[in-house]
Length: 98
Image 1 (cartoon, one colour):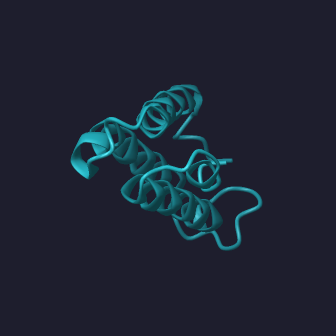
Image 2 (cartoon, rainbow, N blue to C red):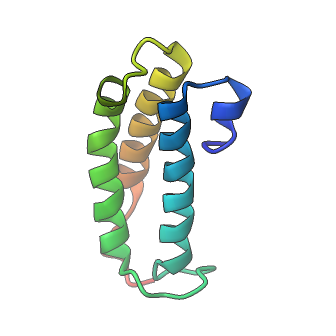
């Protein structure tokens, strides 16, 4: 949905690139994180969590930095993804061995 939203809601080009990059990045990160169903378990689970935290910290600034803060849908998707990422991070045991 993160990759599809820019097309559905006709986001400005910078927002489209951001969300397509996020979707691709998360897919790649998940494909190589050490957990079930990954393609290859290369990235430690804690590193996955640290990467998500860094993305969540940067996301709220993206609408202003990339110049799409006036596009309500794109801006709110950034804020929503930030909130979702923090909730998931808070509910995840990043030290779990399995």
